[in-house]
Length: 110
Image (cartoon, rainbow, N blue to C red; front, side, top):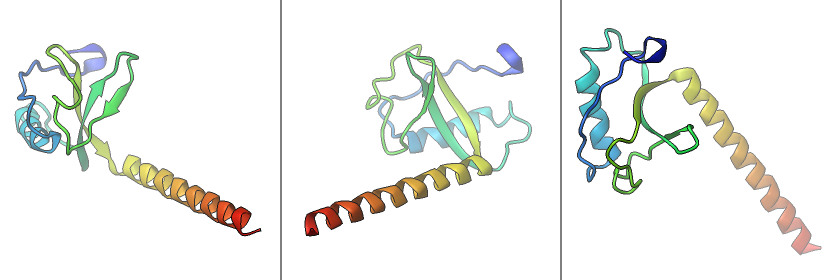
């Protein structure tokens, strides 16, 4: 049991597999520990040197991220409302890029 009643598991993971293959393995390993898994996308995060958690790209492996023995990984469910917030942020970024592109095109036309 970790701080704040969080459960901690020490697992040895294959570092050459893509994260997309590790996530189902971790879900199976923790399903007995987690009585009720929330709805949402399962994600894997690594703790950076700064202490921040960074989501791992599912197409990359732990080797790609240079995750070493003893690194802290966090497996969690990304709640649906968090996914919606991320989508909104991505859409806003796309809108800003389109506006910048339009302004640059306008500037070069005149």
